Image 1 (tube, one colour):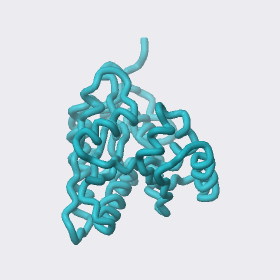
Image 2 (cartoon, one colour; image 1 turned 30 degrees about the vertical axis):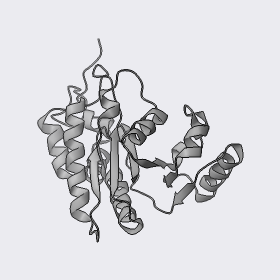
Image 3 (tube, one colour; image 1 turned 90 degrees about the vertical axis):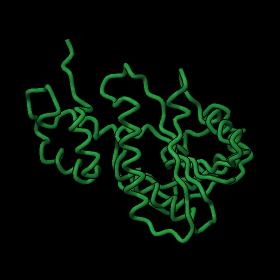
Image 4 (cartoon, helix red, strand yellow; image 1 turned 60 degrees about the vertical axis):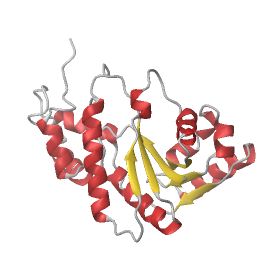
Length: 230
């Protein structure tokens, strides 16, 4: 069974992630692909400034529900949040995740952003991964289509590739890293006393990139708090 494999830290899941998922659901419906696999990456529970796995899963489930509610599908497409990488000890590699899905009878299409394409040759077992796994690349703000096409051609010249499809689609330019930084400065969610000069920008980023239920969940559970060092 062919499926879309959409991985990431999702820390927190934002409207950029949701837009990609909605696009994958639409594509799956049009191409008779019946399954989307979401693969949250493992993050050390001792790594400061990140949400624990159980909270990321709850927020991901909320994001998936929001995406499914906004997309009209002619045929059912299932979405499953796979905790394979979360539950593994040590670093996870995409090649191993793909083999895990193949062992379950799936033929995954690997979904990546254009920012990952230029460095794909440095991924573990990248040549074998390309030869056996179709890539679906969505565009990123700040990276021109011409650059993405060049990166694709460079990869295809260097190794056999099953297929590398560029999706003419720009998701919202949200960044989980920026969101974590902004959330750490929010009143009531930070132990930092100085408000800083970016309060208006902060509010705008959160409004643009986080749904209300996810933002409320973050506040309720005091996620992404900043603890002063020393």
